[in-house]
Amino acid sequence: MKFVSFKNEIGLERSGLIMNDKVIDVNILTNGIVPHQMLGIIQGYHNYKPFLEQLHVEDRGVYHLNEVRLCAPLSNPISVRDFYAFEEHVKTARQRRGLNVVPEWYEMPVFYFTNHLAIIGPNESLIKPRKTHALDYELEIACIIGKEGKNIDRKVAEDYIFGYCIMNDWSARDIQMKEMKVGLGPAKGKDFATSLGPYIVTSDELEQYRIGNRFNLEMIAKVNGKLLSCGNFKNIYYSFGEMIERASEDVRLYPGDVIGSGTVGTGCILELGTEKHRWLERGDIVELEITGLGVLKNIVE
Image (cartoon, rainbow, N blue to C red):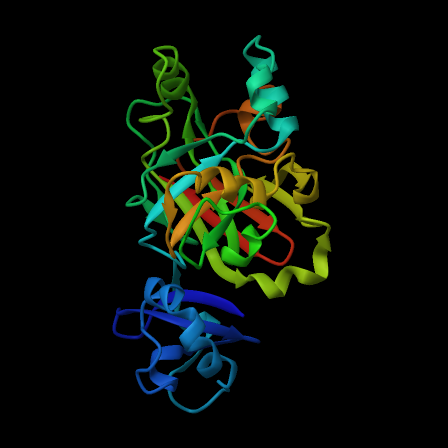
């Protein structure tokens, strides 16, 4: 299933399913059984799934995709943890700063918490932070936790995943680099916005791309129509199972928590170098595309 959040004809945010070129309001078509907000669906998905699987296009609560404005599929996640799990990105980004990969990176997947109240969706504007001169995109995949758990073993961790979506971990590189010299962070270099979307694809939808505990998903990024980044999720060093095991160590994960993969190799300007493309400026259109997960587009303002 492909879940979206959208604004209807009177501007109310609703949750729906994409079927072909239609968006189905799941709350209306289940006569109020399924909640109208995405977080509620995720939290009770086990109970709502039988009703959702029986839905079909009717005359009510159905829109053409071009009749609605899509929002972030999950605008109010419980938390957002973003990992650092692609070796190519880690190596290249650190080389750009004259650094080697520290041995500890190979011992455990690491993450930081970002601002879960600063989520934006597809086609929304990204407001450029006032103090940055080095705005960057980051091409990532996120998984959304669908089941509560603590100390989750990596072997069963995928059972806790509700679905996947594209994630853009926007970065103000000059601010980020300066604050991290102090030994904490990233903070203000990251917390101004994170893009999620355009929809959440349930785990079963990606089985056709499975390679072991990873997926064969092409990941590309374009700025103003120019192809800059090209990678593949199958090359990730740490699987989502390993990330979930680490995130849940001695702490409880909840439905609606978001786990980001970190940036795929070549997936940001920091890694590519400003000789290939300048830092982002107002008016730039950034498009991230991943096999099976659609296209996430934002405009910098």
